[in-house]
Amino acid sequence: MSKRLKELHEEITQSLKGVVESPRREAELLLMGYLKKDQLYFITHLNDQIDEKDPELLEWVAKRSQNIPLEYLTNRVSFYSREFYIDGGALIPRPETEHLIDEVLARVSADTSFNVVEVGVGSGIISIMLALHLPYARFIAVDISPHALRVARRNIEAFGLSERIELREGDLLSCVSEKIDLLVSNPPYIALDAPLESNLSYEPQNALFGGKSGDEIIRRLLDEVYNRKIPQFICEMGYDQRIKVEEYLKKFALQSLEFYTDLASFDRGFALKVNHE
Ligand SMILES: C[S@@+](CC[C@H](N)C(=O)[O-])C[C@H]1O[C@@H](n2cnc3c(N)ncnc32)[C@H](O)[C@@H]1O
Image: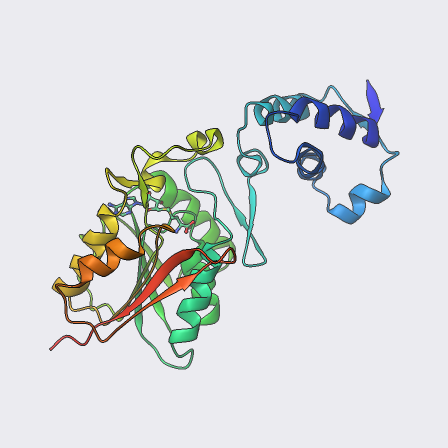
């Protein structure tokens, strides 16, 4: 049986009410993803007939009604104006992580060659965007999750960057013995007991939780910066972790420490330079 797109849109909107924040917009995005069409197509084809009983569409509506993120249904996510593959093995990239890219690009020269290591590569978005902007940089991108590395590999191949971004499986820098000029990371930084929205339960838990207080992995990375004599570290963090980071860094000699904020003016990360003697 078929229905006009606008009727189907209305029906799906009703079934998402009370589950997602913007049911009408979400129903539109779901249908756009299902039809593999953009917004312009959607609004100009509202009278098209759609098979309302298509099993894939029914499954998507049912899953979205359980608050499974749309990105995991469509396997598509947009980051820094580019499109990436995503599935439940990797964290869905967040818009605030785009600031991390900007902060790195503002602090390094695109004309020089240097070694970048990313810890917690997830879907690969950070290393990929940096590699596209820094043509002479070499990248090693680490993750502890084999599933996340599979997602990253797929994206790195799609962008033709396999020669420049080497993926490794390991715990933080345990699998990296090379000299590191720049360390970047968007590590898991949520505290284990933090109250979370239900849709986060579908994302890999080791991508979200940093430990009991949340900043454990950030602190381990700061220790690595000192032990491995890494001159520059740019890192995303939770909006409430600035004081903890400042406190932890008191024991180290710094060249500079700058915090940056996101669009909502929340503290979102820091850039650290260390002059290792
Ligand atoms: C917050 S996600 C970031 C993913 C991606 N870079 C992004 O910004 O969307 C953190 C990532 O760190 C990985 N991770 C967690 N603990 C780790 C560890 N001890 N060593 C290496 N990677 C780790 C997780 O598997 C996850 O992919």
